[in-house]
Length: 294
Picture (tube, rainbow, N blue to C red):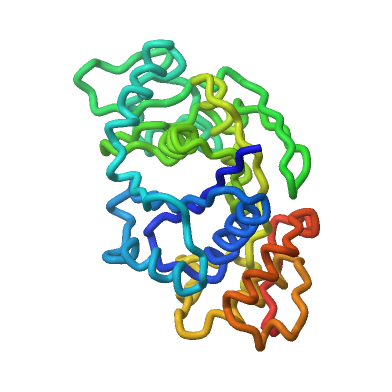
């Protein structure tokens, strides 16, 4: 069976240990299946991007021995692929324009679950609008390879945005289109994106796209229980000594690497990791504390 996986970071900050976990898990799962592993930079939100960060991503991954297949792709260079799909959703009445501001939604809606105001009261054609998907109370069920079965009623999250009022395409639309166009068959990523999966499957169903297999690894948490991220000041990965970091990542992913690998070369460590990779060993928890062990 053809296997195509991917790692798709956003350049809102430098890669940190949590980023490496997602990169390493997706890389090992692809290589263990003798599949392809693609690298796609999801640079769709210029106001939130940090300067020069996305240029550092490929160099850092290479320093950890995580080499991708094919050409490096940037979502900012694929915008012409998204416009016709958005138009298709509008013409099929799966999507509708919305002129509501965040302040207006907050004043009307509990927990920001959108009340379909603009579906019932369409905005004027010259209004500055977002585009929302009509979720229609759709029920989405899927079995995650790590986290097990999940079911979502999209009415609980509301009609989600696929094109923003500031003129940028949303993550949900772009990731769904790119995964389809790049032939992605397996998605291994952090559990912080688990709840977004139902929205992406809904879009896949509306557009007639196949649904990839999903596996959501636990995210690493700091001592306060917060997910490692730019917002929680997670330190950027260093490129000088990848072996102890890779070893710690394999421990976090429940792969039980033997301690002698700490004295192996980087490529020897990765060779062992590919040969012994078992995604079924990863415990089905959404987050784990990052312990200072080696």
